[in-house]
Length: 277
Image (cartoon, rainbow, N blue to C red):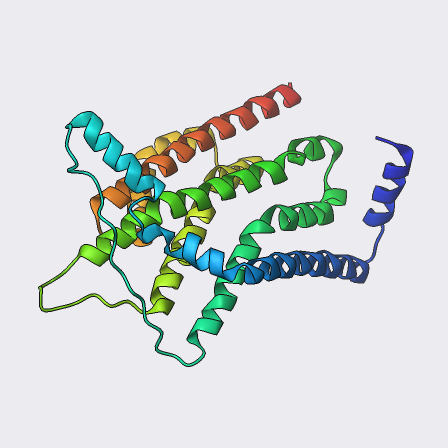
Protein backbone atom coordinates (compact mmCIF):
# COMPACT_ATOMS: atom_id res chain seq x y z
CA UNK A 1 0.00 0.00 0.00
CA UNK A 2 1.36 3.49 -0.85
CA UNK A 3 2.68 5.52 2.07
CA UNK A 4 0.26 8.39 1.48
CA UNK A 5 -2.66 5.94 1.62
CA UNK A 6 -1.30 4.50 4.87
CA UNK A 7 -1.13 8.01 6.35
CA UNK A 8 -4.69 8.75 5.29
CA UNK A 9 -5.95 5.50 6.81
CA UNK A 10 -4.05 6.19 10.04
CA UNK A 11 -5.57 9.68 10.28
CA UNK A 12 -9.06 8.26 9.76
CA UNK A 13 -8.48 5.68 12.50
CA UNK A 14 -7.37 8.41 14.92
CA UNK A 15 -10.52 10.47 14.33
CA UNK A 16 -12.80 11.13 17.31
CA UNK A 17 -16.37 9.87 17.59
CA UNK A 18 -17.77 13.23 16.49
CA UNK A 19 -15.35 13.30 13.56
CA UNK A 20 -16.65 9.89 12.48
CA UNK A 21 -20.23 11.16 12.73
CA UNK A 22 -19.32 14.14 10.57
CA UNK A 23 -17.65 11.84 8.05
CA UNK A 24 -20.73 9.58 8.02
CA UNK A 25 -22.96 12.60 7.50
CA UNK A 26 -21.07 13.54 4.34
CA UNK A 27 -21.24 9.99 3.00
CA UNK A 28 -25.01 10.03 3.56
CA UNK A 29 -25.32 13.47 1.98
CA UNK A 30 -23.50 12.36 -1.16
CA UNK A 31 -25.69 9.25 -1.34
CA UNK A 32 -28.85 11.37 -1.03
CA UNK A 33 -27.58 13.70 -3.77
CA UNK A 34 -27.03 10.69 -6.05
CA UNK A 35 -30.61 9.52 -5.43
CA UNK A 36 -31.94 13.02 -6.16
CA UNK A 37 -29.95 13.30 -9.40
CA UNK A 38 -31.23 9.96 -10.73
CA UNK A 39 -34.75 10.81 -9.54
CA UNK A 40 -34.65 14.09 -11.48
CA UNK A 41 -33.48 12.24 -14.61
CA UNK A 42 -36.39 9.83 -14.16
CA UNK A 43 -38.81 12.74 -13.65
CA UNK A 44 -37.72 14.36 -16.91
CA UNK A 45 -38.51 11.09 -18.71
CA UNK A 46 -41.68 10.27 -16.78
CA UNK A 47 -43.76 9.60 -19.93
CA UNK A 48 -41.32 6.94 -21.11
CA UNK A 49 -41.10 5.41 -17.63
CA UNK A 50 -44.85 5.03 -17.17
CA UNK A 51 -45.68 4.02 -20.75
CA UNK A 52 -42.68 1.83 -21.53
CA UNK A 53 -41.71 0.48 -18.10
CA UNK A 54 -44.52 0.57 -15.52
CA UNK A 55 -47.39 -0.31 -17.87
CA UNK A 56 -45.27 -2.37 -20.27
CA UNK A 57 -46.06 -5.47 -18.20
CA UNK A 58 -49.63 -5.38 -19.58
CA UNK A 59 -48.50 -5.79 -23.21
CA UNK A 60 -48.41 -9.29 -24.72
CA UNK A 61 -45.12 -8.39 -26.43
CA UNK A 62 -43.44 -8.26 -23.01
CA UNK A 63 -40.41 -10.66 -22.99
CA UNK A 64 -41.81 -13.20 -20.48
CA UNK A 65 -45.07 -13.49 -22.44
CA UNK A 66 -43.18 -14.07 -25.71
CA UNK A 67 -41.01 -16.67 -23.98
CA UNK A 68 -44.04 -18.66 -22.79
CA UNK A 69 -45.58 -18.45 -26.25
CA UNK A 70 -42.41 -19.77 -27.92
CA UNK A 71 -42.18 -22.50 -25.25
CA UNK A 72 -45.77 -23.51 -26.01
CA UNK A 73 -45.02 -23.72 -29.73
CA UNK A 74 -41.90 -25.78 -29.06
CA UNK A 75 -43.53 -28.21 -26.60
CA UNK A 76 -47.06 -28.58 -27.92
CA UNK A 77 -47.16 -26.85 -31.29
CA UNK A 78 -50.05 -24.75 -30.01
CA UNK A 79 -50.66 -21.35 -28.38
CA UNK A 80 -51.96 -22.80 -25.12
CA UNK A 81 -49.34 -21.03 -23.01
CA UNK A 82 -49.53 -17.73 -24.87
CA UNK A 83 -50.77 -14.70 -22.94
CA UNK A 84 -53.30 -12.32 -24.35
CA UNK A 85 -52.92 -8.57 -23.91
CA UNK A 86 -53.88 -7.69 -20.35
CA UNK A 87 -56.80 -5.29 -20.60
CA UNK A 88 -56.33 -2.95 -17.70
CA UNK A 89 -57.21 0.67 -17.14
CA UNK A 90 -56.19 2.12 -13.82
CA UNK A 91 -57.98 5.02 -12.21
CA UNK A 92 -56.87 7.80 -9.92
CA UNK A 93 -59.14 8.59 -6.97
CA UNK A 94 -57.08 11.29 -5.27
CA UNK A 95 -56.64 14.88 -6.40
CA UNK A 96 -52.87 14.73 -6.00
CA UNK A 97 -52.59 10.97 -6.59
CA UNK A 98 -50.84 11.08 -9.97
CA UNK A 99 -48.30 13.64 -8.82
CA UNK A 100 -47.56 11.80 -5.57
CA UNK A 101 -46.97 8.50 -7.36
CA UNK A 102 -44.84 10.24 -9.95
CA UNK A 103 -42.61 11.17 -7.00
CA UNK A 104 -42.77 7.61 -5.64
CA UNK A 105 -41.78 6.00 -8.94
CA UNK A 106 -39.01 8.51 -9.65
CA UNK A 107 -37.59 8.07 -6.13
CA UNK A 108 -37.70 4.28 -6.52
CA UNK A 109 -35.84 4.46 -9.81
CA UNK A 110 -33.35 6.91 -8.28
CA UNK A 111 -32.76 4.50 -5.40
CA UNK A 112 -32.25 1.53 -7.71
CA UNK A 113 -29.91 3.33 -10.11
CA UNK A 114 -27.80 4.90 -7.35
CA UNK A 115 -27.53 1.67 -5.31
CA UNK A 116 -23.92 0.90 -6.45
CA UNK A 117 -22.78 4.41 -5.58
CA UNK A 118 -24.49 4.29 -2.16
CA UNK A 119 -22.83 0.96 -1.38
CA UNK A 120 -19.48 2.38 -2.48
CA UNK A 121 -19.91 5.40 -0.17
CA UNK A 122 -20.63 3.22 2.85
CA UNK A 123 -17.76 0.91 1.95
CA UNK A 124 -15.48 3.98 1.96
CA UNK A 125 -16.75 4.86 5.44
CA UNK A 126 -16.05 1.40 6.91
CA UNK A 127 -12.84 0.78 4.96
CA UNK A 128 -10.39 2.38 7.46
CA UNK A 129 -11.63 0.03 10.21
CA UNK A 130 -10.82 -3.07 8.14
CA UNK A 131 -7.60 -5.03 8.22
CA UNK A 132 -5.55 -5.28 4.98
CA UNK A 133 -6.66 -8.91 4.53
CA UNK A 134 -10.30 -7.91 5.08
CA UNK A 135 -10.00 -5.08 2.56
CA UNK A 136 -8.87 -7.60 -0.04
CA UNK A 137 -12.06 -9.56 0.57
CA UNK A 138 -14.29 -6.51 0.39
CA UNK A 139 -12.74 -4.97 -2.73
CA UNK A 140 -15.25 -6.67 -5.00
CA UNK A 141 -18.03 -6.58 -2.44
CA UNK A 142 -19.66 -3.45 -3.83
CA UNK A 143 -19.68 -4.94 -7.33
CA UNK A 144 -21.05 -8.30 -6.16
CA UNK A 145 -23.74 -6.67 -4.02
CA UNK A 146 -24.79 -4.36 -6.86
CA UNK A 147 -24.94 -7.21 -9.35
CA UNK A 148 -27.07 -9.38 -7.05
CA UNK A 149 -29.41 -6.46 -6.43
CA UNK A 150 -29.78 -5.64 -10.14
CA UNK A 151 -30.33 -9.31 -11.02
CA UNK A 152 -33.02 -9.52 -8.34
CA UNK A 153 -34.70 -6.31 -9.52
CA UNK A 154 -34.61 -7.53 -13.12
CA UNK A 155 -36.08 -10.89 -12.11
CA UNK A 156 -38.84 -9.17 -10.15
CA UNK A 157 -39.70 -6.83 -13.02
CA UNK A 158 -39.34 -9.15 -16.02
CA UNK A 159 -40.71 -12.36 -14.47
CA UNK A 160 -42.65 -11.92 -11.22
CA UNK A 161 -44.43 -8.62 -11.93
CA UNK A 162 -45.99 -9.48 -15.33
CA UNK A 163 -47.07 -12.98 -14.28
CA UNK A 164 -48.53 -11.63 -11.05
CA UNK A 165 -50.40 -8.83 -12.81
CA UNK A 166 -51.75 -11.29 -15.37
CA UNK A 167 -52.96 -13.58 -12.58
CA UNK A 168 -54.76 -10.85 -10.65
CA UNK A 169 -56.33 -9.27 -13.74
CA UNK A 170 -57.84 -12.57 -14.86
CA UNK A 171 -58.77 -13.84 -11.39
CA UNK A 172 -62.50 -13.52 -10.68
CA UNK A 173 -64.68 -14.86 -7.91
CA UNK A 174 -67.72 -14.32 -10.12
CA UNK A 175 -68.56 -12.61 -13.41
CA UNK A 176 -70.59 -10.10 -11.43
CA UNK A 177 -67.34 -8.52 -10.19
CA UNK A 178 -65.24 -6.39 -12.53
CA UNK A 179 -61.59 -5.68 -11.77
CA UNK A 180 -60.86 -1.95 -11.75
CA UNK A 181 -57.52 -1.20 -10.12
CA UNK A 182 -56.46 2.14 -8.76
CA UNK A 183 -53.32 3.67 -10.15
CA UNK A 184 -51.87 3.76 -6.63
CA UNK A 185 -52.31 0.02 -6.02
CA UNK A 186 -50.95 -0.89 -9.46
CA UNK A 187 -47.81 1.23 -9.14
CA UNK A 188 -47.22 0.15 -5.52
CA UNK A 189 -47.54 -3.50 -6.51
CA UNK A 190 -44.95 -3.21 -9.30
CA UNK A 191 -42.41 -1.19 -7.29
CA UNK A 192 -42.78 -3.23 -4.08
CA UNK A 193 -42.47 -6.59 -5.84
CA UNK A 194 -39.45 -5.42 -7.83
CA UNK A 195 -37.59 -4.00 -4.83
CA UNK A 196 -38.45 -7.01 -2.63
CA UNK A 197 -37.01 -9.33 -5.27
CA UNK A 198 -33.81 -7.27 -5.34
CA UNK A 199 -33.44 -7.52 -1.57
CA UNK A 200 -34.13 -11.29 -1.51
CA UNK A 201 -31.35 -11.87 -4.04
CA UNK A 202 -28.83 -10.52 -1.51
CA UNK A 203 -29.01 -13.86 0.33
CA UNK A 204 -25.42 -14.96 -0.57
CA UNK A 205 -24.10 -11.66 0.77
CA UNK A 206 -25.94 -12.17 4.06
CA UNK A 207 -24.48 -15.67 4.36
CA UNK A 208 -21.02 -14.24 3.61
CA UNK A 209 -21.16 -11.83 6.54
CA UNK A 210 -22.69 -14.37 8.91
CA UNK A 211 -19.98 -16.89 7.99
CA UNK A 212 -17.24 -14.27 8.45
CA UNK A 213 -18.62 -13.52 11.92
CA UNK A 214 -18.77 -17.23 12.73
CA UNK A 215 -22.54 -17.18 13.24
CA UNK A 216 -23.28 -19.81 10.58
CA UNK A 217 -21.31 -22.65 9.01
CA UNK A 218 -21.65 -24.73 5.88
CA UNK A 219 -22.59 -27.76 7.99
CA UNK A 220 -25.30 -25.75 9.72
CA UNK A 221 -26.73 -24.63 6.38
CA UNK A 222 -26.64 -28.21 5.04
CA UNK A 223 -28.27 -29.58 8.17
CA UNK A 224 -31.18 -27.15 7.94
CA UNK A 225 -31.51 -27.30 4.15
CA UNK A 226 -35.02 -28.82 4.35
CA UNK A 227 -36.12 -26.15 6.81
CA UNK A 228 -34.69 -23.51 4.49
CA UNK A 229 -36.82 -24.84 1.62
CA UNK A 230 -39.95 -24.43 3.76
CA UNK A 231 -38.93 -20.88 4.72
CA UNK A 232 -38.24 -20.04 1.07
CA UNK A 233 -41.65 -21.38 0.06
CA UNK A 234 -43.32 -19.29 2.76
CA UNK A 235 -41.33 -16.24 1.68
CA UNK A 236 -42.30 -16.85 -1.95
CA UNK A 237 -45.98 -17.14 -1.01
CA UNK A 238 -45.79 -13.82 0.85
CA UNK A 239 -43.98 -11.86 -1.87
CA UNK A 240 -45.76 -13.33 -4.89
CA UNK A 241 -49.50 -13.66 -5.59
CA UNK A 242 -51.25 -16.90 -4.59
CA UNK A 243 -50.56 -18.83 -7.79
CA UNK A 244 -48.22 -21.80 -8.00
CA UNK A 245 -46.36 -20.58 -11.10
CA UNK A 246 -45.09 -17.33 -9.52
CA UNK A 247 -44.15 -19.08 -6.28
CA UNK A 248 -42.13 -21.73 -8.13
CA UNK A 249 -40.42 -19.09 -10.29
CA UNK A 250 -39.22 -17.29 -7.15
CA UNK A 251 -38.44 -20.42 -5.11
CA UNK A 252 -36.04 -21.92 -7.69
CA UNK A 253 -33.56 -19.00 -7.91
CA UNK A 254 -33.72 -18.27 -4.17
CA UNK A 255 -32.96 -21.91 -3.37
CA UNK A 256 -30.08 -21.76 -5.86
CA UNK A 257 -28.76 -18.70 -3.99
CA UNK A 258 -29.04 -20.68 -0.74
CA UNK A 259 -26.80 -23.38 -2.24
CA UNK A 260 -24.39 -20.65 -3.36
CA UNK A 261 -24.39 -19.45 0.26
CA UNK A 262 -23.33 -22.94 1.40
CA UNK A 263 -20.46 -22.86 -1.10
CA UNK A 264 -19.40 -19.39 0.13
CA UNK A 265 -19.49 -20.50 3.78
CA UNK A 266 -17.38 -23.56 2.91
CA UNK A 267 -14.79 -21.41 1.13
CA UNK A 268 -14.53 -19.08 4.13
CA UNK A 269 -14.08 -22.02 6.50
CA UNK A 270 -11.35 -23.50 4.28
CA UNK A 271 -9.46 -20.20 4.14
CA UNK A 272 -9.78 -19.71 7.90
CA UNK A 273 -8.41 -23.21 8.48
CA UNK A 274 -5.41 -22.45 6.24
CA UNK A 275 -4.72 -19.21 8.07
CA UNK A 276 -4.85 -20.96 11.43
CA UNK A 277 -2.52 -23.70 10.18
